[in-house]
Amino acid sequence: MGSSQVTPTFPTGTVVRSVAVGDFNGDGVPDLAVVNQGSDTVSVLLGNGDGTFYKARNFVTDRSPVSVVVGDFNGDGVADLAVVAIGASGTFAGVGRVSVLLGNRNGTFQAAWNFGAGLHPSSVAVSDFNGDGKPDLAVGNLASRNVSVLINNTPPPRHRLGQPLDLLQSSLLTGGAALDVGGR
Image 1: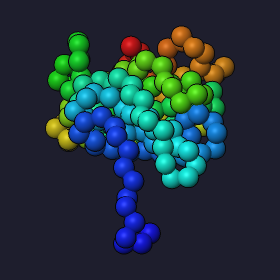
Image 2: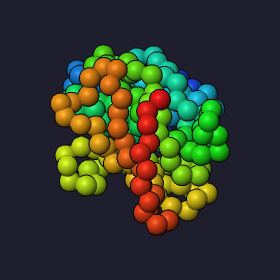
Image 3: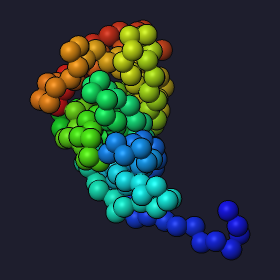
Image 4: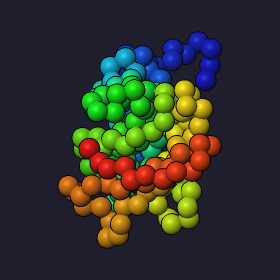
């Protein structure tokens, strides 16, 4: 990259906090997922393969999202998104949540499934923490000073449209208690 080149930029939502890379439409080209804290959305920019991206499509998350990761959370071979949000809406007000948006193979996503996290989550990571071959989530919680681990218990046969995801939440560094966290 030379110093005389202009760096291309691509519009998203407001107050960009986090970016993740995945192939959201199955074309083998990297796409971007961008968390927009100010507009409570995640923007998806499909890649052209030449370093440019199509216009962003926005998908609703919970209130005040701050971090995003990519994983196949329902085992269908399609990239999904997990977004952590600071201020949950509805009955979980004051508690952070994880919004899981299941991919549709065409660069779009289903409405979010929401799961509880700790107070004021600040980041999310994905890995198989229990060795069962399914991606689990770890959420760093700023205000509660701990990490919430959400174990993916979605049973085989793999998730089907309309079947709820099953994530089991256990909070580390605060006693390891486990509770079942339902979808939607």
